Length: 259
Image (cartoon, rainbow, N blue to C red; front, side, top):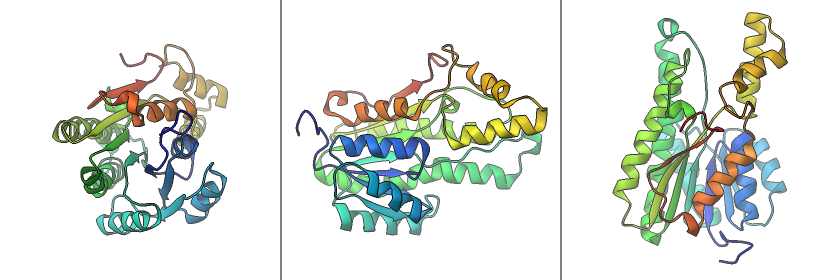
């Protein structure tokens, strides 16, 4: 490894990589020298991003992270293209809202499947490579919703709490294997998910877009929305050698909303 490319020769697989936080994480890890596999559902969007990444040797894989066969096939394709997986960033996720008494079983299962089961399946798929290599980094992108409660998103909150719990348990299992497992928990971040949430507030309440956005920012003591680059920088640190002793942690990137 070099100072400018600390992840040189490492294969990093990022799920939900086509846009938002996932795309920014992919750019950041590629800039640090990693060969990156971009995993998501939209092949064209993944290919477009792959062509723009610094460095070379990157690949794309199309998969539904909640489907075991789809995940297995995608990881096999990624290994063939870029070698054993050394870094996994579980970023794929969805957020939907509904009052608890109106939360359907379909919504509940969808939130669990994508946000929690997807992280479980991808971690299982990546772990054999890390164990064989004696080194690995698993970073689960949870949310402050994995650290506290929010009204009207009980299914999402339950799934993200599950991600944090899984992170802690797996971290203990692999602590002596050269592998760390951590979660990054962003507050409201400037992504398509937030923009969709703002649009919903505007449609349902008649508030302006600026007013709706200010409501989301109000929970952050810094009174602002987090940028994807700030989340990506936290992931970058956790993937580096300097974070070798950071294990089983849930790092809140939220301006102090969660302490």
